Length: 221
Image (cartoon, rainbow, N blue to C red; front, side, top):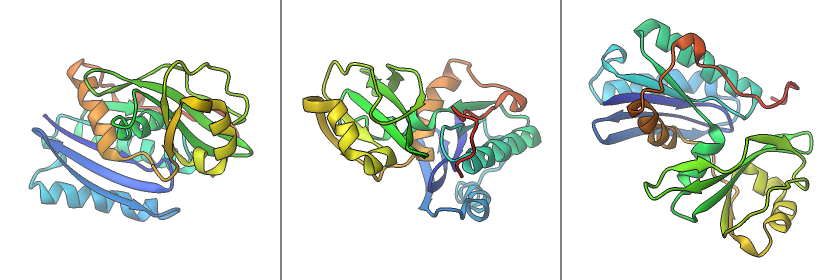
């Protein structure tokens, strides 16, 4: 299987290529520079792997939530690539991608992205025996002190929401908080990990159905 994934939903920009068990990735934390980075990253990966877009089996992308501009960018680019190559697409939650990147830290992950305006995008995930994360809650946007879902086991926090609202989120998790990484962003390599399973299950969609998820209508960057 050969898959390409991209993500531009947060301050980090990344692209990753999966070819028969091996993953190549380009990753850079570069706020507001994604437009000039993402396609060169894709081209560099394809050149490094000595392959072409048309020879891939599918595409994946971080479909949000995140910064409106970044989520729109990833959606537009992946749709363009998919239309040009007639490849199926798997949209992957950026919150799930962050949780997947921390799947070795705990059996429960609380992903939180700073949504500005005093709010966070967040969701809770469990880590299965196969090492893949699955949601325990809906993805939501809310004030960081209004989370109402009871944590039933030890958890680990990831995302910029923890950096901006450490006290409120730590208070919510209480004694069940194992730790957190406020500097973790979604990565295309973690999107690939989740997308591989989705493609195996036949869950790829047509380019026109590869849609973003914003969670709210107000633009925040």
